Length: 535
Ligand SMILES: [Zn+2]
Image (cartoon, rainbow, N blue to C red; front, side, top):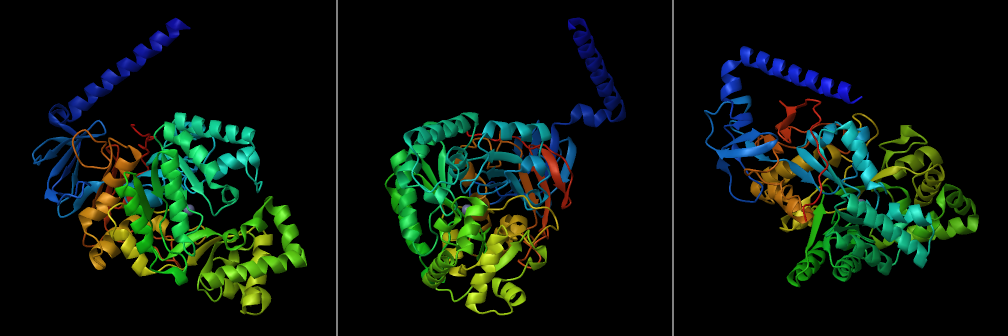
């Protein structure tokens, strides 16, 4: 055994030497003189720190940025002409649901909008075994870098199912052990999704106990809060209190005001974040740049009605008395938000009948129940939830809140997107456009923030929060995650009606020094790495 192994090593070595000799013969000058593997030449560097842009070339060796400066005459194996274009660090998308990256390793829609690193496991939903998830991605290889949280809902469900009660001491210990294992495997922190089953059944002290485990590994606490509109301030207060009691940095997920009756409340939420920061805490937020949210149908129902899985849900929906109670609570919930009906709710994907995808609830009510009135809308939602539910797009945010949140320096820009398959369903357009929408709509058209600041919010700001020490800026020694775009044309093209459209104006994306996008097209290269915090 031993002998054959040695001889195969010798064989491989001799092949390498022969290959190198052949290369030298074919391109003697380049092979001998190349200082860089890749040279991005002629561009204007926006380095991710927020500093003003400057003219510079970027030389890359062995997947890292080797030099930044005047390098126009340097030899390189691959030269990328960035004349007239912006050269920025690859975007770090801190809030995604790209958990299934191993099944969609090219992640085309992320790569084509300049996202080179995704953080998955948000809103409480992640693989429970983070080490196994990393192993799967490492084996498959992906086009983009990957990091993940460990999610509270997933951990709670593994231990307690969807029980609507506090954990026993034994159950809490089991959950703590799962979080500890995930952190040891390299999770960036602990996430919650407190509007979803079963996380919504957890009291604050349970979350503090689990966040304390993540704090031991210096993880971040990220939260899809209990409420994002009618009780926004209470939810922000709880999120900050958890961070303070558990002793770790906080990331408020997809900060928004999702109730017309509370539009403007983002000012208070941001002031609460400022106050916590002034007291010495690390509190950041992230946002996506659209006036509609994406979620499931169940979130529009009272959470007690969703306990115990589909059979238990259907038993409640089928019982006239219970259904009447559910309907009254739903009526109250939309009224409190300042909404008259469900015209704000559009189906993204309804597996039971995909011909209804893209329609609003009143439109579906007309089709299924012959009426658009509110009661027909409730009945429609009852029918849909009974048939397994749907993924939905909910249009209920205001542009003023989006812009106010975006102007805050400690808010990162993140898509909240899962992995899309081109042409499938009617997903939220953010998965195709969020990062470039920042550069096109919010920088160039609306002038809400500067280009340098938008880039900072997608690069060095998240890199610092999550301890990605070697990413997020263009500087020697950093991983060569780089995006090249035309600031005059860059922008999103995906819409609510036609989401499956890749962006405009973004030409080149390098991940760890390897081109994943060239001339606006995916190269099918898979140089992505697992990214862990350096703490
Ligand atoms: Zn969420």
